[in-house]
Amino acid sequence: MFCVYIIFSRKLNRYYVGTTDDFVKRLAEHNDIKHPESFTSRGIPWESYLLIDDLHSEQAYQIEEHIKNMHSKKYIQNLKRYPEIIQGLLIWYLKDSSYIYSTIPLSS
Image (tube, rainbow, N blue to C red; front, side):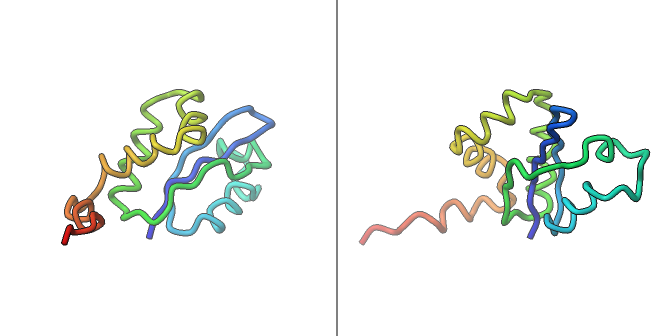
């Protein structure tokens, strides 16, 4: 399963949005100085800000792109403040819409 992650650098006062299937490993890579020319190396240390997990790869990449296209720190902060925004994204970018119906209890 994949996740969309948002990390934050106090040094740069910036967020970074990405997708991975191993968040712990990916965060360690962002905080490693093996590639000093990379954008994230300038922001070390990066800390976890928000994680949206248990996603199919296509869903994760679509949500990542959506968040990046918003170009807004406020939007990222609102994702954490208002979890219903994330729920809306999960439904909007759901790969298999039959999942929505399978979670609704059937009436007797």
